[in-house]
Image (cartoon, rainbow, N blue to C red):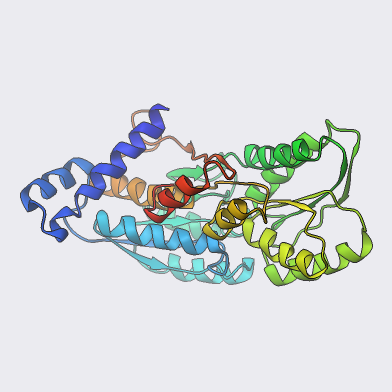
Length: 336
């Protein structure tokens, strides 16, 4: 709670730095900006996440740019394009340039280690977002901001299991197998279903966050299995793509759960197309990376005791009809 309260306090004071742009007491806005650690001179930051085709990543880009403006940071984007080789080429390019700090969500663990180490060795603070670039004991990133993916997978799975009264058939459609977030969500799913002997897991194949691949997979699954009680997807984009296939086949009795709590999923939860999702706080992770990078550059904040923890858990809640509207508002303002 203390960490979260501190982050929110930083967020609010950082926002005050932008008040002068709206004609509200420039002297006060400038003073509040100093308290927040806003840079007096523009900083250059490079960001990359798995692929802007994914709505979570696209929202993260918007959040990073929003918080960048508040903290006087010019953000340059290197799209991972949902492909490890393409992201590696982008990060090699990033590593050839000069930056005040960088923030990266890797498409797969171990795929970016060499160029990231090159930047770290040159003195650039590197913030790891959402999924491990490499194990934390093997790479000197400034900090790792990520949710508890095991919790995310387990919480949505438990909601689905409760809704089918602990018996029936279930499917898990995974993200990219090399993505440590997907690995955690799979562990969370398995930790729940193994407690229920009357639940049969029919399929767990990955779809790599690709909605076209999901549609193909689910065309086959719906033909193969006449009875599917519930389905858990590692992100909302895949869940909604599969739901569209279910709707075409008149199979909307299947309960659908997702991850990320993106606006389209919040709408789907509200109107009953999805049973539940869980918030992977893209805005908190990407905006928090701006705050962390600025603190490292402007205030000289180090990793560890007295500075930023090496690993910061950025959890969001399970989202149902009851809290979906509030979640939508917070996302609109890049708060979670």
